[in-house]
Length: 435
Image (tube, rainbow, N blue to C red; front, side):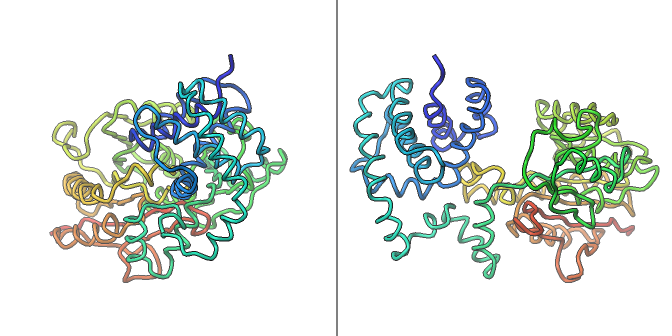
């Protein structure tokens, strides 16, 4: 019997929200149970529920007296899946009702069929009135913007003029960006290949040459993908290799390198460096680094290692350039990973900043005098970014900040979600002075 998509979506979102599992870990397990076009629909349902979670929770509360708990809890997520379909997909309402209620059996909650059917039908009947009420009554910010309250407050403090735009950007589907391997083709040459295949693009970033497609496509339809001519990488992430600006003969270190996109880009962009060492604390994640290097026919020394304890793995040779893509909250890539909103907690940020500072301090000792360290995160929180770098500069007199943008008084370069259609990202460039 074919698996019920709504049951799989309910299990997946339940595992993420209530059990704290990563969507990147949980969704592939559910996708493996189905085939073909159903995979796209399952992904849409899971991503959609996680994007709109507070709003859907608000909708359910309107029609149920007592929250489902314990063994019935997965039924709650089935209701969220059902309402998401009615509210945001083109699935006919009758099909959404039937398939969602039918999911009770594989979820072993047949006794909830009547409740779930009633909630969905009541929502359908009252949707127009509810929409009118929502527009006239002020909803809590967490519901109106579909983000946790603690995060909204941080954005309001950090970006008083832009916080709503950031939250709205996080709710959008991310675009597909391409990085051309210029060891094979120039950007202009690759654009001709895309045009020949009738693959439309919207933008070429003037600085990096990053290409944004009109719509996402299967990577195997990209000219020369399996031959290493092109990679998929967000436009913000493609700035790293340019900013690091490796020179011929450099000994280069990429910390926290998995899945290897920036490692490979540095090797493509600066093919005359002497050596590249790519480390990550999780050996399992380095498999992706090795796969990317192999597809692109590039060479690097890939090591499972903790950047916070270099004494356990460092060979004593100082590095000319270091990219530290530090562990962070991931708050700049919520549009790609909506589960971040529910997995990350307010209390996590202080622990992350201490870890970042510890890694930065230890890795700094591996850099040659005159060398460059590029600090990067996919966060938009100042305490992980500009405040973190300022703290490091204050504590280390041999660290000199080099301005990246025209705003010379800014510490680093903060890219907010949807700036130039890119992910949220942060970069700061530090030179090690000889004292």
